[in-house]
Length: 194
Image (cartoon, rainbow, N blue to C red; front, top):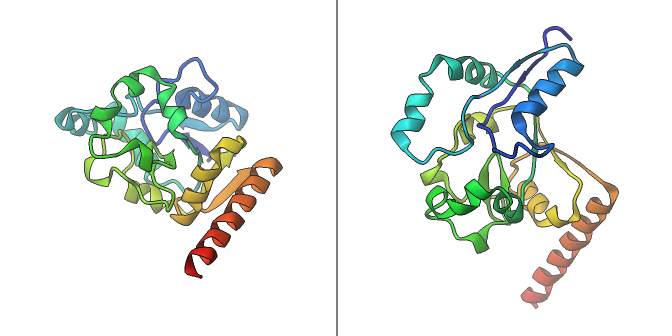
């Protein structure tokens, strides 16, 4: 296990009082497996394009990003519109971070980016993320999402439809909800065709 490396591939979500603090997750996992870890000393979003691009040239960022670009497995959570709203800095600046995205179109967030119910990323032309690009993330062979809350069923269905993940780990109750909603969607589409 000494060859295992844990890397934070996106900036910090600034949810420091939560188990979802990405920097500490990477550190804790590396300790459990006696592996090396790399973190990104930056926030998840930076609005100023020049500052964000300049940050990538910093030595403190380059090592983590180099390791992240060679990942063969990543673990992510699926966010809902409420999850981003719960972080005041992002909620208060939502329109600056996603100026061309309508909140009502969002089914979920993955890799810090909003997507619709069909898995289409909604801010591709105006991405303010610090970390790996979406293309770099999508080239990772195994992209595993974790979901345990039934409120994430629409986010799950969108991520699956858009092939944003390769695997999904969820609770039984969430699985039943996703299946039931998917069956309802199929039935509605069949009725529309009559």
